[in-house]
Image 1 (cartoon, rainbow, N blue to C red):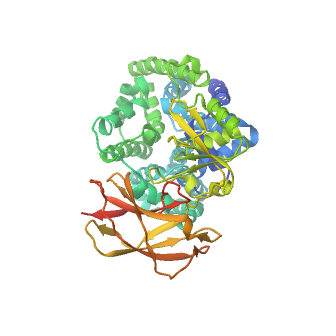
Image 2 (image 1 turned 60 degrees about the horizontal axis):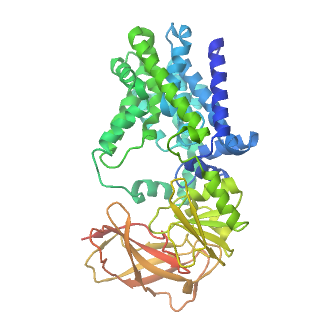
Image 3 (image 1 turned 135 degrees about the vertical axis):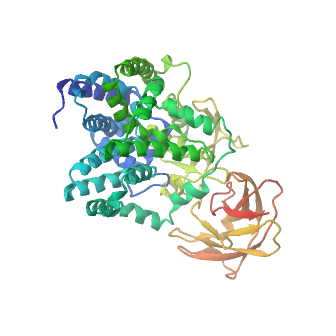
Length: 555
């Protein structure tokens, strides 16, 4: 592989820009959350597979602070540019290096993921590697190529679950692969490499899959937010070049198997998320993988269509000017008229740190604030998730253990009688703090209802099992039970207290790794429009947690 000298110079400039951006730009909340992942490396995490955590940890070996977390992202951006360049066979490409960089650098999210450490960053990198290897596989099928292809398929899945769409639509474009022994070898290699994550999911009752498919809250369908918003996102990922890039897509014919794979990937993702938009709001980054095949098709189109090439370059330069201004504003906030989420976090963290001192800080319902505080303060923090929030990594890792039986500063959006501290976040929303001298929670306790669905008018007693996953017994007097009623979007509407009866006899505690069986009388909700329920627990008079799975309420 020999790259033109100008190409290498521009790659160097790209690296410098992204490294400087990484160094001078504070973390956004998702990056802080994924940094939290990287502090305890594992084969999986609640929200995502583990690739971005390993990248953050690896980069931190070379640099401290924000640059360390993002450094591998900066390098992966170079890899994406190189892989896309190598996938283009057009004989004129060496004479149009600058237009190539203008096209790619003007793609908004492809630009942003040149330094942010987010799941889509490794997803884009390994998508480009997978497509490049697949192109090689089509012309040279061998054991080595199959193994490399399988490794990249696994790396894709370790990046983000959406990667299954990339693999599926590429394979769908060439159904003859089902009869190809080298293709099957690639599949077996990928499954072998991905097996540790599958086992991690199995050990945790597939909690991540359960959440994304069944427990995740949603909202009412609205055309302007869902479907129209989806098409706006398709424009946003390209910026002002979108008419000519999508024109290139429309004009491209599947004259070979590789181009056919690119078209299947693009149209497959577009159709999949269009259909999904009728069920939930589609975020722009969910379709970002089409940036890779679009870049290939658009550049080939530019080389054969001079007029369209001129417009892509003109609009691309406009995109780049806006992007560079915004990126400069991320590092130097006075340039921007409004504050983005990465600005001002050091300031509010410092205010909390000055008040909390060495005491841990517990944030109620905020997997965003907890890791941001931990990153910039260097102190322990924890997100205490209750029934009105959602599960996250703090629900399954050992963060809870680090704050048990300690004096903590408990911060929430609610002002209580014992409030002693107040701070505003970057959106000027107030948060209130109070001291808890001996903090103790058991948020990992599980309530397993025997029924798969419950009738609203049932008069029968219901059973549930209380499971203690901790390595210590828990006194039952510290626990209070309730029924959380949720609407059709899995959002809690009310909690009704219940006093269940033990079926195990008179015991005062639940032993470590043990279960107890309870029976209780069903209580109707007082509010209408409830569709689900879960059994929840309040420990030491905290707000009820997220202890049970959602159960369908039959009306």
